[in-house]
Image (cartoon, rainbow, N blue to C red; front, side, top):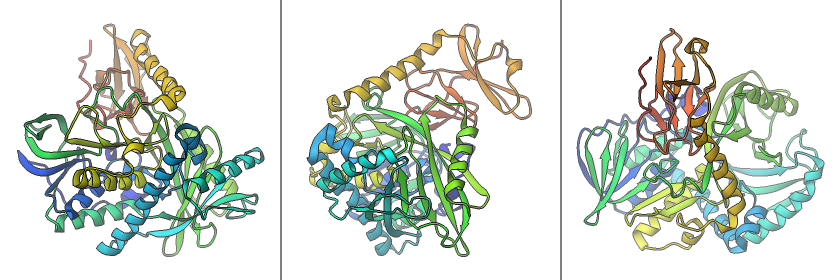
Length: 508
């Protein structure tokens, strides 16, 4: 099981990966093991297979069933957290390296589509950064200066943004992109299969051990995969308890999609300056009509229960600006990890010599995943890369100290929830299809009542670090607000870093 088993269905999930990958039945030996079959993992596997490595890929659920399928599928190398912000923390060299690596990622996707004949609706289009309010116009000028200093020489000021709803000034960023992420992953899987890579679904990894210049990965079914190198590309690293998890924070983001007439909206990437959660917009082309995709309304994972209101606000915002938008056909959510200093963590894993990781997508997981694949390919093949220092997972977070402290204080309050009372005082207060926290025998319990009226009772302590989980009404799952683990209604892990189920609780 993975995030594909959450309640909502994205537009992309209508095109599942066609390659029927089996479970790993026993033990395996390979050169490189890639854990995670989203865009980061499959891109790593592709780059290493093309370099001549024997590669195996495993995923806890179906291939392509994780957070890659829950994105809006922007391909942008304008920094999601803004070059102006990164420049203030880490300087001009960091901005330049970020721009170069993310631009290389979009170029690489285009190159692979051409080489492998992958038809995934890829197009290079303009991106527009627009002010949410008139007072934000001055910030656009600062961002333009920072983007150009980073190397984005053809970023430009335009007096009118895309479409009638954005009549004021905007920043235009040429050569961004959009595609269908699962069609792209489907093509990568087929290419990997032709190159002799082995891919296994429903094969969770529950432990890593380095020994005798090898890495031994223990599977949830009791097998062992032995590899010379391992890449952990699981959105959030499951193999670490403390490192990385205190440096980034999980956020839920929401997306809606509906059909719109051809030409009613610009085929462009658009995002605004709204704080704390900006809006982002793109088109997915269709034969007779296009699909408008609009996202936003982010919040810290586990810290909101008003998902219906957030989705309604998102639709209201979209209809005010795109009056020809038809009925909403898809509503879904995804999870992003926000690093304290705005830069993902890619490279050799803390505490390991032969394990590499990719995490901290900061809302740009598709380009980050591919940039990470290029970086890890060079680290494994050459031992170095010009982007290593920027993305170093072991770096100190002194320059993001304020955000670092804030996020960890937020996490601490959720551990303290063990000491408080439950959300309901009686199991009878939990209606069919709902979940809530309740104190049973002095312990916080995650209680869910099925549509048929049966109760599912689990410990509310996340099996990663013991934080109290929260019920997610929209996705019908339990979310850990500390480090972003998700569990099914009956406690099975769907999203790391947790990889073991919530322990069962017997009714009193």
